[in-house]
Length: 339
Image (cartoon, rainbow, N blue to C red; front, side, top):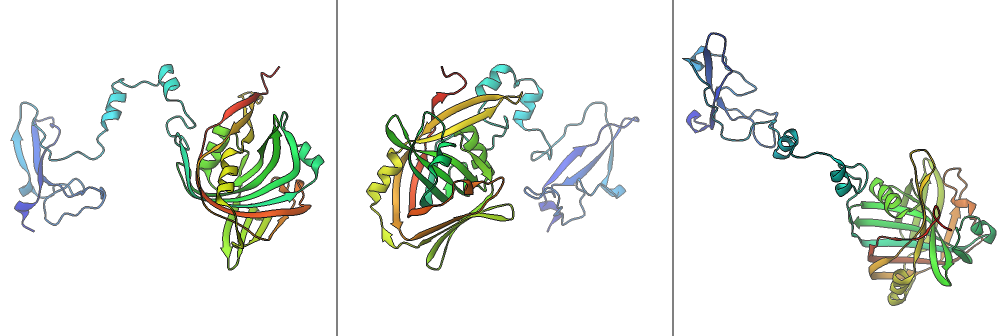
């Protein structure tokens, strides 16, 4: 390449005690996107290859600052926002904190504001009968036990707003509130931090980190849940044996209220928030729904005690695929201020 065709910069070194300044020609050899690699193809100097030959230097006498000529932004230059912060234009005062506070961490929350839309959300739900006394011990008032039924769920979320791609598994209990049927989420285990943080902080989902999986193996839909190296749940279902009415499924997802017990601790270890929360699913579009023979096995674990609600009988197995929006919730009972 002809040296005359190479972009150059004229730079001025800081003045020396004798009033002399060294000027040199510097090739713009550090390309955008590759700030470390030098792509110089001539003998011209660059910032990583300083002037070495006396023929490349010019001594000049100066009495005032020599201008700096540049044909692009310098590496490491502070951004405009950083310059404003340095100048004191932006301050993290109390009004700024109140205005911008959303979630933790303050400057870079683990999840964005909603709405939270899920595309191709895939459910594998095994309905089973369990011990009624054990259910009464974990269902908070004023919710009432409807039937001694638990919905054990494996759910794939391949495309969700802000939370990304993750899988979860857990137990939901059939309840009644003021005479109306509903669902109470008892336990959830999943493999995605944004969904764990957002679920716990916004709604109060009882989420813990684990390794759930949902996949098709030949003719069988298989859901598994591992906590650490140990298997704590395995569910199986015949793959798409019989179709279900999508309108009925859509109505069940949209119209059934869901309840959560939200607890956020105070800095002194006591409860700062202790609420019964209700939320609903919106804009539900069922893409497919099937039933089939199902089986469920739960295994004891000290920190993932899904087996504490034992399987007495598997009542039904369903496989659903839907798009939906997870709406924000409302407080039904504030236990800290209840009369």
